Amino acid sequence: MPKRRRNPRNADVSDVNGEDDVVLRETAPLQLRYYGDSVLRKRAKPVVEITDADIQLAEQMLMTLEATGNGIGLAATQVGVLKRLTVVDLGEVDDEVYEPLVLFNPEILSSEGEIVAEEGCLSIPDITADVKRPERIVVEGINVQRESIRIESDGLLARVLLHEIDHLNGVLFIDRISGLKRRLLSDELLRLQQAPRPS
Ligand SMILES: [Zn+2]
Image (cartoon, rainbow, N blue to C red):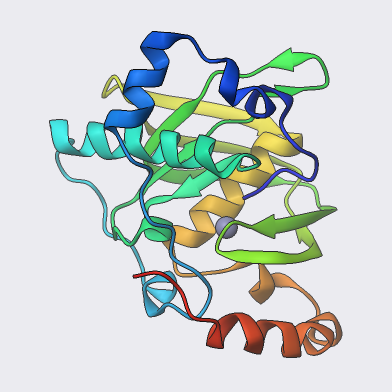
């Protein structure tokens, strides 16, 4: 899921120190999958044993997210990997800096309230719409240290987690908007579906 305004941390990418620079050159971002790609409609499978390769995938996903310049969440499905893995990097929100989060096998334990806010998706460029979602959630999953964690969240974090967990179930945010709004977007969605993409 992209941020609505540009992340100031990412605006300074040219200012990274020499060491980071080498890492950036050695690991290329993963190829994003876009609307119209059938992989986005598939249900991802639980990660039974988290291997070193899975940890590396999570790190590559965080890097891919960073490379988008405005991304705050990414599901493995969006890089064509059908594993239940998502990464979130909110950066700075309302003067609070959030650490990047890796979550394997995220499960929503409970949700309450309802709130409408604008969303977009890195896999559906240039389209945004208001989406109604639960306001507060409790999510459980396994972090990058292979520890089971429980996250109680609201606001942007809750929204991103719900958006990314939807991806793992083959659900896109445009599935959650009103029929009228979707009809208004239908030409644009068709154009995206038919747009040539790098393979
Ligand atoms: Zn998305």
